[in-house]
Every structure is written in C-alpha cells, then in structure tokens.
Image (cartoon, rainbow, N blue to C red; front, side, top):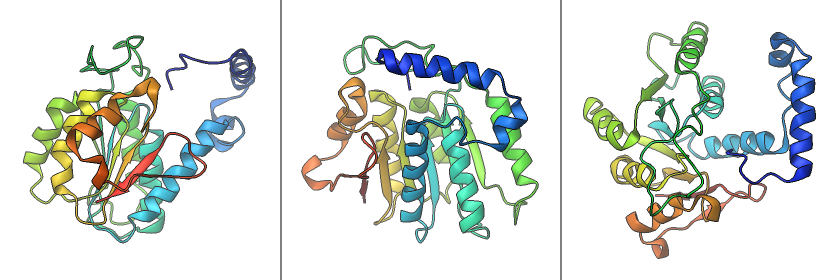
Length: 240
C-alpha cells in the first residue's frame, strides 16, 4: 500500500497500532502474527490461500512480480511446503527491484508516485529467511524459492533464457505499474499451460490503472474470463 489516500480514522488507527507495536518485542510480534494484523493483511492472506489452491494440481512455477518485503512470497513458500512437500518441480520465484518503483510511465501510471515508494525492503534479509526455511523442509537439496533482483522489464526475459524447464502454473502481477506488467504478460504467458492462473493485484482500480491497461493491450478482454474473490476488492484472476 502507498497509503496515499488514508482517511482520518485510518490515520488514527495506524498511529495507535504503531504505538502498541513499539511496546512489544520482536519475538512477541513474530509469535503472535495476527495480534496486529489488519483487515487488508487478513484479506490478502485469504486471497493467496484460495489462489494457491487453484493450482495445486497444475505443475510449474508460481511467479510473483512485485515482492516488496516478501510476505506473500513466503506465504506461498510455506503453503507449498505444507500442502505439497515433495513437489520437486514447483518453484516459487519472486521478481522485484528491491529498491522501489522503476520503469514508471508518465502516460500510463499515477502522477503522485515516485521511485522511493516500496523501497522499504531488505533483499538480504529475505534471502536469509529463505535459506533458513530451506534447512528444515523436505527435499531441500532442490531449490524451492528463488529471488530475481532488478527491473522486471529487463530481468524477465533474461531469466527465461536460463530456465529451459520453466513452465508457469500461476503468474501474480503486483508491480502496480504499466510497463513491468505488460512485459511480464508478454514474457510469461506463453509459458503457461491451459488452466494456469493469472492474478492481477489491482485490476480495474483507478488509482493504479497501469495493470489493467497492460492487460487490455496484451490480451482481448472479451476473451478473458476475469473473476474476483468475493471478499477481496481489488484482486482479479483468470485461467488460461
């Protein structure tokens, strides 16, 4: 969230939440993750669980374009370890600059965003978290979770060249921006089997219209059965 359009009530809630979080130790927070979870975070968690279940029987990678701090990526990782521990052909792959927005389009993206947004992340921390969890999962000699650092308009095509085995069960588009979304669709859609799921985190959302515009420019919307989850306002998905 960019938190560009918070109400006064939301600002007051966030201030009180921040004060209470500051009074707790890091271990306390980690052991009680839902204590301070808000409506948006719970909604995101439920959405990702439901989406993951849709591709349990489809081989191939889960690719997330737009990782930020890695919360969703690690949820997919944990779901895979829990529900399909021996799925040696399932990769969870996260693409992000890990330095904030890049490839902002003056024409197709909001005017009130900048490259510093979503730069509050830590690539090395996330990499260490993945390595730590790898130590205790089944079949851990075969990589399950990978990070691809850099502007996706460059790294997507480069990555595909290194992975002749790559098939994609689910493509998650959460870059918020037009050009990275368009490049991801053009690069990864040809690698998805029939039944694969494409997810747009901000579909038909006027405050971040780039994702939807990219979808319109790559595919014919009349031929896409775009759906939503009833409890999630912004997420849309369709099957190949």
